[in-house]
Image (cartoon, rainbow, N blue to C red; front, side, top):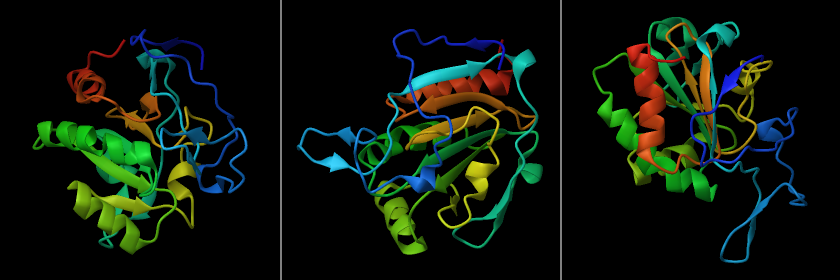
Length: 204
């Protein structure tokens, strides 16, 4: 990637292992897990919320995917072409995933009826666990279960990938990666800006 713009100066650069596959998070917490205030070490890889934007002229080819959501409906990049797409990678027992749910819901609701689509990508859970999370947090957009196939994660190979849990990828109307939040979305305004700029064609 030759030119990457970073407009949110308050967010630090995240150092991650580029080859990390989300579903391969080890039970060996080692140096890859993050400590929380209750003294427990959670078994997931967490970024710091750094935002990376990709200048329009430097974006790679379109991301190609097709998967079934928890209702059995097909979610595909082809059907979503022409829309700004937000892909949120999460799983139910990840504390930052729970914390960011309200912000994702806020931005999702703000763009109802516009050319914006949200897709949750659950990287670890079975259907029942994912559904319970969605009910509890009022998640209203489709979720793909990616733990077994890893298809959604593999679709981003060679791109700015979701190398942490949670991670949020914004695709432009042509299906190309436009931005990534690596770690929890910690305010609605950041994601709203990323989505709104793509929808309005304001990206650099």
